[in-house]
Each structure stands twice: as structure tokens, then as C-alpha cells.
Length: 382
Image 1: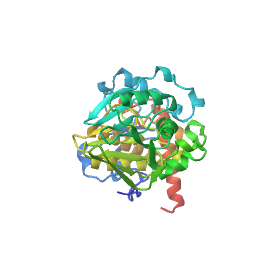
Image 2: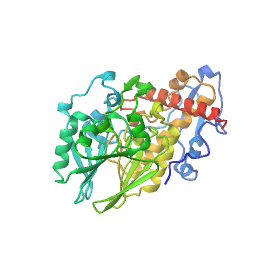
Image 3: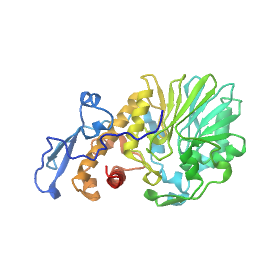
Image 4: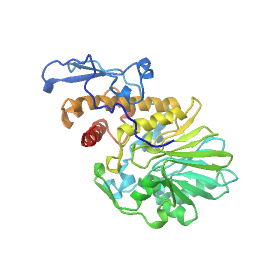
């Protein structure tokens, strides 16, 4: 499978038929109605982005009821959702977390497959007679705690560490594990970004080049496979999604998928435009994962609790719908402030808006990403 961009609608078309204007733009309030399941099922990925009812109404318009945040998140997960991702990029943004207080919690996902949760991105593990295969490694100060958690379930060495992308809450332990003999694997773009100065505009945060021992030793372009512990572990590169170097990892026999930060379960996702991230690519990558997943699949998200295919589908529908709403207003010439004021996430905020990206901030992030995507497309003459 390759990471080619998908052609077709890019959510920058005009408002759908049936949209009505009432009054001056300055007084317009948008009421957004989620499309039906039947409509979503009959349209192709990304083409569904414009399949949404947009109606101008008064400020008292009744919004669609929001679903409550899943009870399964629990207090521990809610606390983690409020941790700023900025900490993953630069300690200067918000200050470092207290790593001494961080607990590494182990969840058995399937036979020989585990998820470790701590401070930063979720870790995936395959353990068995062939050794330990680990996905992501949190922050450097947590390395000893990660090793202790792994040692509690396996006496084998950590042979491989695969980074799902370059962000520091997923690669911070690379140097420690690399010096200890683990082979670090990632997409080509992860090594490129880790080898050079990086700047994330959204957080106004800089990241210097990583030391040589932290860099991936093995890199790949489209796909790579490992045959370990009685399973085939396959990774593929998603097109620019959360970043331009995202990997999705499938444990084929175990029917488990690690999505990296393409999937934030239970909170609005960060899309790193400065690192090539793109909301269209996010949707395309999610569609590829949905094609791989079954109703019995267990899905390890980059952030948030262990998930099912149904959880991922609901996340995709939310992201698709909100991006389409913002795109429509963007193409009507609405300013960033006007789009934020229109509250295009209102019917989703109770469930998804409790993370570190609050609704208005996330709408601004999506607006900027979509505008950047449109400008790039215009430059290409598309």
C-alpha cells in the first residue's frame, strides 16, 4: 500500500444545494445538522465532506444534541486529556511535567500485545520469544519506568522501536533505547525532521536536531513488515496527516492497529501544519485504517483510551463534519474570527472538547490548516 494523495473533492467547494441565506452576513448564525448514517454510507471518503446540511438561522436555532463524553474515559484519562501537547514539543511552552509522578499503566490488548499509557503518546508492544517490538517511547525521563513495565511482562530485550512520527512525546526515549541496542525504525520524513531544527508555528515552539543515537537507523518510504512473535507486523506511511511522516502499524494476526496521532480518542486532534499535517490527509488515513479494521479489532490511538472500530468511525465523522462546515464558511469569505464565532463544533463539544485543544482554539487551527491547503491547491492550479 502506498501513501499517494487521494484525488477528488477536497472540501473546498461551494455550499451545498439547499443552503439558505437570511439577513446580512454579520448577523448570520449557522445551525449545523449532522448527516444521516445512510447518507454517509453511500458516499465515498472525502466526497462526503460536503454532504452536510447548512442552514442560516437565528441565534436561538436548536442545535443537534451532543453525546456525553464516554464514561469509559475515566478520571485518569480526563486528566491526561488536559495535558498540553505543547509539552511534547518544547518544555519552554508550558513547563515540564513532573515525571517522578508519572505512572506507566499496562493494558493487555490481545495475546502478546499490550498498550502502555503514561505521559505522552500511547506505547504499543508485541512480546514473545523473538523479543519485544515497541511502538513509540514517550519522554527520555520515563525510560526506566518503561523498561520496568516491559520487564513485568517479558524477559526478552527490546529489539525494535518504531516511531509513529517525530514529535517528542513519541520519540523522547529514542536516545536511551538506541544506546541500549534497540533498532529504531521510522518513516523517511521522521529521520529528516529529527535531524534538523524544527519549529511548530501553532505552539511557537522550536525543537533542535536530535543526537545521532536518537535517530532512526532504518527508514522506509511506503511500507515495512516485521515477522516476530508469531505475527506479521506491518507499517504503512499515511499521506500528510498529523504530520508528513505518520506511520500506522497493524498486528495482523492479533487484529490490533496502532494509529499514532492520526487518532486522538475522546478529544479534538492536533494537526501539525508546520510539519506537513493536513486535515484531508487525516481523513484519508482514517479511511485506510477503517478498511483494515474489523468489528473485533482493537485500536491503540496516539492519545486517549483503547478503542474499537466504531470509536474510530465516530471520530472520523466528527472530523469530517466539522472540517466541511469550516470549509464552507472559508469559501464564503468568512474571516477566522467569524468562523470561530459561528461555533461549528457546538454539537460535538460536550464529547470532544474537554482536551487541551478547547473548541475555539481547535476551530482556529482547522481554519488555518484548510486555508493553507486551499492556497497550496491554488498555487498548483487545481
